[in-house]
Length: 187
Image (cartoon, rainbow, N blue to C red):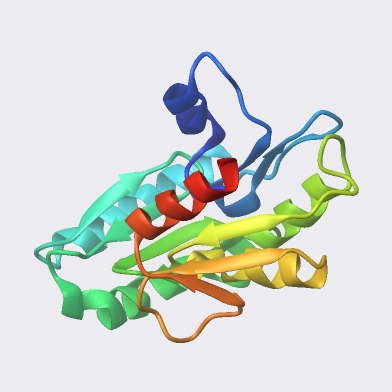
């Protein structure tokens, strides 16, 4: 389950094409499901122009164009988050089909109607996931919908890092701790 598009995951894991979800649940690929809930190219083109106009106004920000979503990163301008939300919120009007999502030093416009939680629920109803224990490990506020869904399904949720507020029931300090935990599970 990723904020990145499935085609990016395919590139990273090639030649394997994992079952999963991309763009925060807007794309789902399973054995029995292949769903894409994506905005049309024309409307995304208009949004793309507007987002780039906003980014030009705020030094230290840059756009990650994921095709069906646009993430504005502000790591080099950590105080710009509230300004970005204010300027980008009108692009997520109810009739746009987009929602505004705030993450750690990123503000993203993504397709609405689905999220990482709905993607988890959808995949857990199909093989090979049906009847199994879902586990979600995440480090961003964008993972909270998945944490809520997995908790509802009786699974295991792990937030990574110092963030205090989370629906996850377990915590690991950093990616190194996650790798160590996974190595223990394999053993």
